[in-house]
View (tube, rainbow, N blue to C red):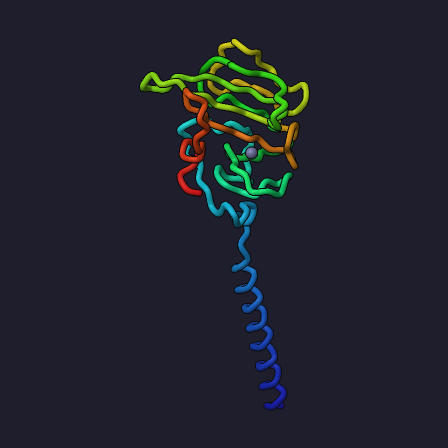
Amino acid sequence: MRLATKLIIGITISIILICAGYCVILFHIPSSDSKYSSQVGKIEYKGQFLMPVENFNVVTSKYGARIDPISKEESFHTGIDLVGDTGSNILNIKKGEVTWAGWSDTGYGNCVEIKHIDETGKVFYSFYAHMRNNSICVETGQLVVEGQVLGIQGSTGWSTGEHLHFEIRLEDKIKIDPTPYLFTEM
Ligand SMILES: [Zn+2]
């Protein structure tokens, strides 16, 4: 009888330890951060400019040298690729004037360029590419306000999936890294 009691206690303790082990394993599975790709890591939106894609989820390609996803050759990525929920609106980051709205044969697909003037009076441009067909809702020469809808996220031009290719261009049209205007850490 005493032996049976010891056995029951022993088995009960074993079951409790096994369950505890599973709990430890479960609590160590990463959850919320796993949607960010390991290439980019944890990012934080800074908000110097309005986030140009509504319902933003992830950065899929940074500014700089990379292997082009289509040609498979080394190339320079002149912007940052941002992905929002499917069919998200593309938003103007700051008030300005539309300098291009339409199709581009240079791989950008349906795209919009907007001229802005910063706090110091310097001209710069924001650029939004790969928008969905027939979604562009601004015209060249139009004055636009911050947050105005420019079109819908798409995959037109040289693109392997729905995303926004976003650029910042200086007055001489040199394309600089837009990351510091949007994020604190990449
Ligand atoms: Zn891109």
